[in-house]
Length: 122
Image 1 (tube, rainbow, N blue to C red):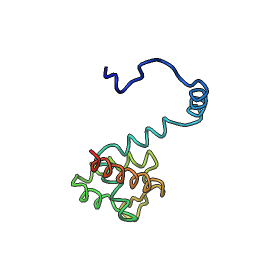
Image 2 (cartoon, one colour):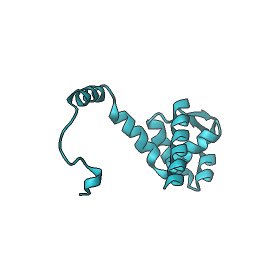
Image 3 (cartoon, rainbow, N blue to C red):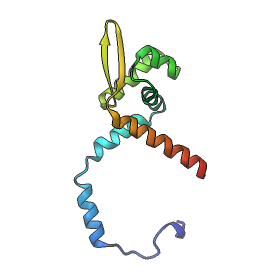
């Protein structure tokens, strides 16, 4: 263990720890981590990003954008839909997908900005 990245003595701020533990109990980390896991897959991240660039895409558009089969794109879209990341509508024989809400766009843009900043600072 590297002594630089750990405390050399054990002590903690009881008030701070109790306050934050109380806050932790009020947050649904299961849903939040499921959301982030869904977007963590590279193809699903690409799909979500693509939907940030255009209001709506059909499954065939998505498949071509990410360079995958329609079946593979459809599988990823179903996963995103189950998490509420995307919504869809049918128009005849076509299925169109769009972002579930504006928060998803914000999450993606923040993650992209962060990723670019980390690359610059490394």
